[in-house]
Image 1 (cartoon, rainbow, N blue to C red):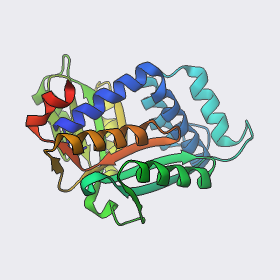
Image 2: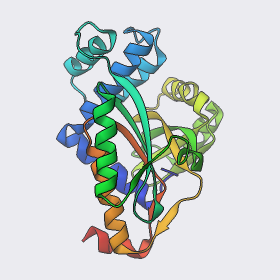
Image 3: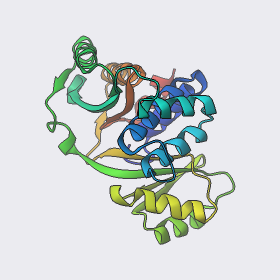
Image 4: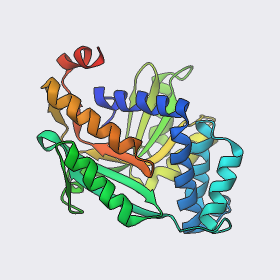
Length: 250
């Protein structure tokens, strides 16, 4: 997630596929429920909830899904409370992973994470033993169509962003974690349509994998973690060597 590198593009394409399958709706609902649980069900007074709703709308989450998630978070629907939890682990070749999750059963999710790592050449790590290799950042995405790079760069920097990275598909804006909401709101007021706004963990030093077998194993592990029902986000320091991209895509 260190910007517009090759593996970041692969993961973002996967996110679009997930959106088509409806997988992303579940992630949005989890985040909305957590935000409502933490700060109440009114987006006017709950900035995290407002952001979660905006992100859900950006991927066309149905309104009834959003409303149900808010009620789930505020306890109006009953059932077990959803809790936030983060797992850390290492995959094949020591590739680092951070998994952010929303679950109503901590024992089940912990056992499942341990099983996924163990069966795929990895291992669960203690909290902090992986995350120190990452920096926490705010991340904002904008569509590239009709938005010149220099226009986005100027607006983002004026709003307080740390970095802007652009490619033909989109603009990626990075901020300090405590400045995410401020920068995002400034961009909205300037007329920009945001497609994503969230906190991310960016690897300090990407780990470049040039062995096709290891790359496939790590991609499989990433997919399994990301597809797990309670997963919100998966961050990794994995990068694909340029010479492997065509081979892995075939």
